[in-house]
Amino acid sequence: MWLAFKFVRPSLPILSGFATWIIARACNAPFEHSVVAAFSMGLSTIGASIYHYGGANWMYTRKDERFKFKNPQIVMLVGLIFFALSIGIAGQCLPNKACMWISIGNAILIAAYSATLSAHWKTKNITMGVVCATPVLMGWQAGTMTHPIAIWAMIFALIAHLSREIIKDVNDIIANHGRRVTLPMRIGKEGALQIAGGLLVIAMLFAFGMMQFAGNIFQILAFSFSIGLLLVTVRILLLHKKTGSCDMLIHLSVGLMIMALL
Image (cartoon, rainbow, N blue to C red; front, side, top):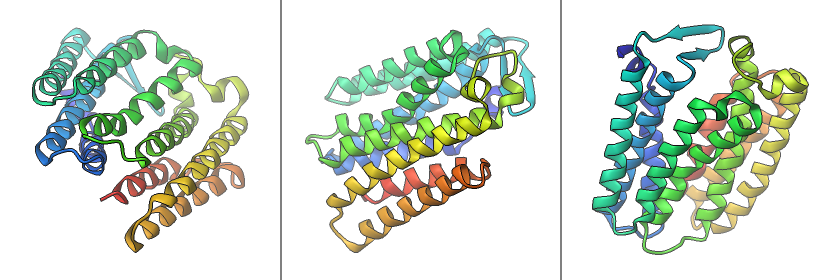
């Protein structure tokens, strides 16, 4: 079971919780509600990571490595405990019960993803794109008003993470062989990189749309730098036909876009 905790990157629950907190504050959530929503999302992220490592057909693959668990049911149980904590906190401490249902939805999606949805690129990538956009949705629902940028930010995060999932599939093509059918396996690495780059171009359009809500020089600079990172990523994908550091660049771009709302 310790192996599952080893693979829960601390940055994931921290970043998802931070994004939830920022969006919640932008949507006029009281400070305590924004903190609770962020904590609930962080727990959900930890639960998702641990459950998937135990539930993905008894084996977790990453790049060209494969890691087996002796007792995957115990790993899955630990993941479910974190999901239950996330759901309970959201349900008991946040006035909008939509937050609780978001946590429940995440748990259901990850369970289905580990069992069957990760087997094919269509359901795999869409599911992860939706899950990665839920921090924005959680923050939005924790607030008392709808900031007009929330919807833009959610769609931006969804599309950017769809692209990121395709890039990860290119990197993990060896490990995924014989385990699942991914987009690079179906149309080749170059075709997959072109689609990933095209999705980022669409994400940039939404990023440009979000700039209309910039109210100060910090937000303008953050939005601009975020778009610049996406431009660099698209160049790497489409011109150099490599993945390079694209995964990290997308993470930075999405993070900057969210931080601009501080």
